[in-house]
Image 1 (cartoon, rainbow, N blue to C red):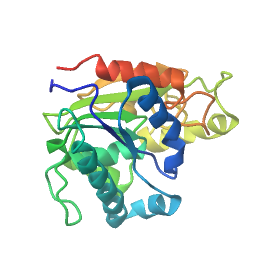
Image 2: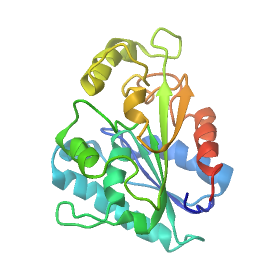
Image 3: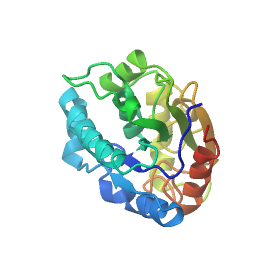
Image 4: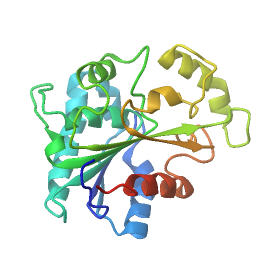
Length: 236
């Protein structure tokens, strides 16, 4: 397990079609509760729609890289912690790699020694071509010098915390990702997909994929404390 300074700065990459302001409360919580320097990768809906193609991934990962290098210059450890929600967590696995992608070599593992993924669809029977490429080329915890924590939510679709939207759509989403509808998940991503193979793993009960899916999600203060404590409980 790599040594990780719990006070090193953070870069956040959000999920598909979720704009960066949705992560402002998460960043504020990390700043206020742990006095961390936090940067959110700017991403609009058009940016996310372009991630159907490699150039769209490159555009967002270029922004991640610029923020990481800026944060690294202020880091007490010389390293940066990455947080990726949903598709952002899969994209950050590619960012860590030293292999070329779309004309770039990011080699993020040289600057980032912890990746926390929140409800990211890592393993899937059916995935978009680029997400499938990540799992094929960089399976599991691909970079040995990085501490990976994969966080998954378990949402009771019949309970009061699930939204009407998740009750209608979750089973179809689960089936499209893992081929089965009657599985556990966060209203969008099944547990078996979010729990990256080989990573430290955490399942959060009563936790939705995002605000559209339920009243409490990974970015809610009471859930933030749980997964951040789990991430920083291991520092070496």
